[in-house]
Length: 296
Ligand code: G1P
Image 1 (tube, protein in one colour):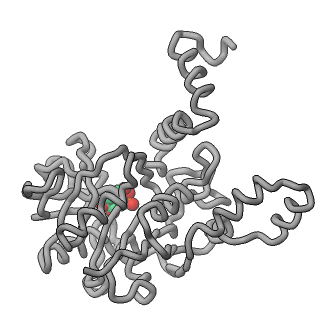
Image 2 (tube, rainbow, N blue to C red; image 1 turned 90 degrees about the horizontal axis):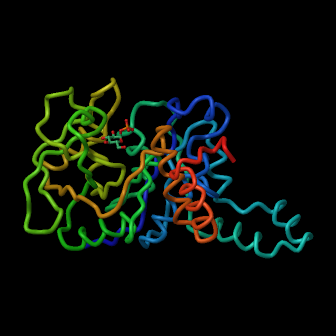
Image 3 (tube, protein in one colour; image 1 turned 90 degrees about the vertical axis):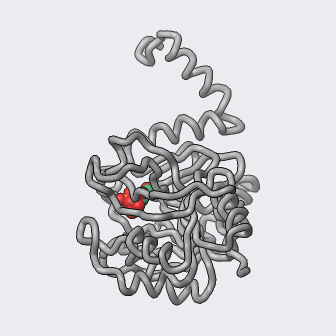
């Protein structure tokens, strides 16, 4: 079985849900506590043993590439000012992992964005992580998926249960239970089903472990939901061709591309923060005890 070495992270989207904040900066650079959201994603990849990240970018996204690059000028200034700790922190980011970027020249959909990675990924299984989806978990979500892959040897989509009235916002999977915990054999999947048209509450979240055959299938996928080339449509074809599993991961997922989801992520990640967690918890307790922020 081939080792999972590469992760594709599509970051070409415009971030319209977050305007005006994202007018001049990529949505992936919005901050959660002290790091841009994209750094959490890349840290999950690194903690899962991946060696190379492939960013699928578009015009206006160079801030993301710069974030993971070495900044000679900044490093020189910090050196002169004896800011050793800060230098180390910044250099750790640029040394995290090898980053390659590929431009998606036209916004033809998520499926098309992943297809753009075909030459860099080559003939090996790989991960896909969507930049809007942050996962807080004991074991990194991708690491959980790689563990399952080592057992089943097939493609895996991470899923979570969602309220029935929200299924229209996701790719929805129908599957059959297997004898492995929290793991289902995929039978059907549909991108953003119209309300009331799917019996399942298993929603795809932005973590996929895919076989290289997906590239051929994506190349043959015609526009689907929203007139875009949908990854979900090619996944359905892959599931029919060689099988696929849906995995209910351990952890909590945040839609950081949505304003409320973003706020929830900030609160929960702040509570986890080694230095800020405790004073922030005290602040929240004051609010919960009826002392509104305006009273202080
Ligand atoms: C994408 C996928 C969808 C998935 C979702 C998870 O949709 O197409 O299948 O459920 O991510 O975040 P998007 O949210 O980009 O419209």
